Length: 452
Image (tube, rainbow, N blue to C red; front, side):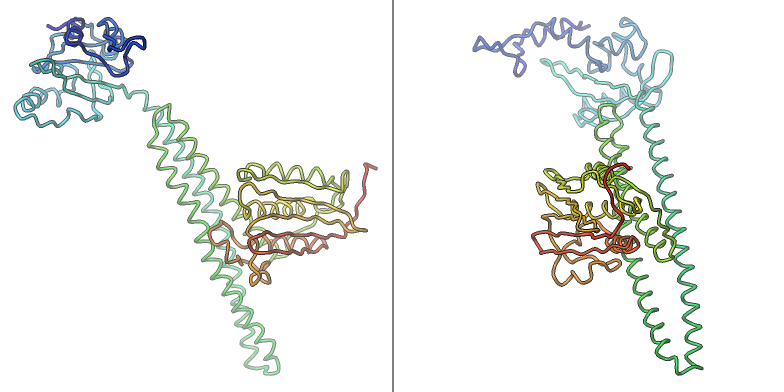
């Protein structure tokens, strides 16, 4: 029987010189001591089993002894099928014989998942790779085994995460269905009103102009509905596809050292969920505005604090090299206004400046007081707005022709203008395509400085 030292000596005596194992002070290769190979073999984390061409175990390392539960003396000289489940053990000798005769491999040189059998008869999952080793005229086979038992808990955790993601997607879907049902009810009500007006038209010819206006309104509503369905199907498809693909890819990274890959896909899922939430928030805001359910909550607040909150929230979304430069002439200014609506307006305009500006470009936020009016100006050096699109910029669902490849619903600026109108202000802008845009908000609100 070949011992581990004699097995190493076979290579050692034939002047075995591994790649890169050279003495830097000598021009000749560095000859490896068999004791070094022995130490590497015995301290390897994975199991290593060497058998001869009759399937008899010649060498095993310490990891193999610990995993299978046998003493070394119980394994050496025995047929390797003692470590296999019954259905594989009965076929092993014939497979080895066929390979020796035909040299056509089915397992050799190919790693695959199998079951191993311990001394106590218990089975465990393992990854097996087998390679042929030739020393002179003798054939040996070296098997490398990795225990996959610990991967089960990781797979269970991934399954739990997948189920949690599915639950969240279902929850968001139900919320969307609820809003769709509300829109259907609104449409049903509008259709009923239109039918009533059509009946009046047949009996009251003198109201023809009013009825004509109702018909035009119906056409507008149908166009809005078609644009909404088209936009919603497009905007929801991208984040949902991202969630689906990332959830599937997570299962391909079961190992502990692959946490970085899993985390990257989890962040993509979180980002997509946030995107869906933002779209739903726009729909909810628009519905409340259309139904007149927006109530003003007037309070006093420090403008600098509000700006700081918004900039902190937007900071993770900045592109490389982007920064928001604050040029404030209203230090210590307190506004008496609806803080929530002001925050929404500021967040939306700054978010647009970030989204439509390239990397390494600054965004400017300026605040001033002119008489009894407060002015807020946001300027970017982004893609700008085509001249022919500027008259439609605040229209619901409208998006300029140069932003078709950038995520958006076309509702943000429409909602911003309605919020500003509710607060008694106005918004205006100037823009040049390819150079950037500047939005200015003027608001005649009660303002004062200090804390009294």
